[in-house]
Length: 232
Image 1 (tube, helix red, strand yellow):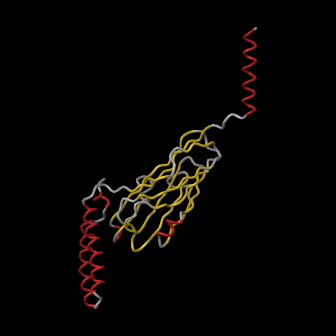
Image 2 (cartoon, helix red, strand yellow; image 1 turned 135 degrees about the horizontal axis):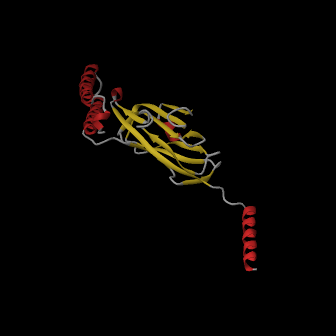
Image 3 (cartoon, rainbow, N blue to C red; image 1 turned 30 degrees about the vertical axis):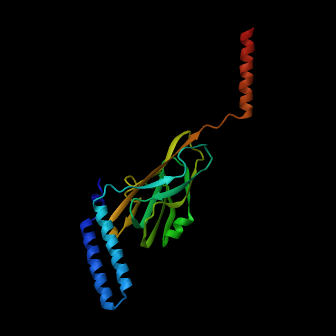
């Protein structure tokens, strides 16, 4: 799926920018705003036009949700924590929504990072659901205007996974735009013209409880008796 299929109408978006640029300049001239303000507004609009044109001709957009660790191994009942980071593929965005889900976890918890709270005018959630796309899921997000420009990475928060009662085995916590009904994404520009689908996976393993001292002692005693019996 190329980036063109992620636009509602990229050509209209470009022409809206051009018209906005013209109206902005004409309006500023009629209102008598100083030349510096006109130049700044013109530059801003021209930058947007350049970015829109480059996005129309660019390859697939694919933002990433990364996690601070990828090989967590714990016994059942031990909580797992991992930091969640947004790595966008859009040069700017006004809206972000992230749904993190797991089909095996007992429960999920989430706490926002201060960087995320400071970046947005308002944040969404965190909200939790155990009857959604995944057996357990948490939704987070935010809205901001004017858009955030030039973000290469942004700390979202910390995910905590409750492993109480989980069977031994491999599990994942997932962000997947294609599975969660197109909800995990970034949006930018008029009428959400550009969509940056988000994805990421956190892997973790539940391992057996280690043998306790008492069990080890019994095993050693059994082995000793077996050796004595075979030597007779």
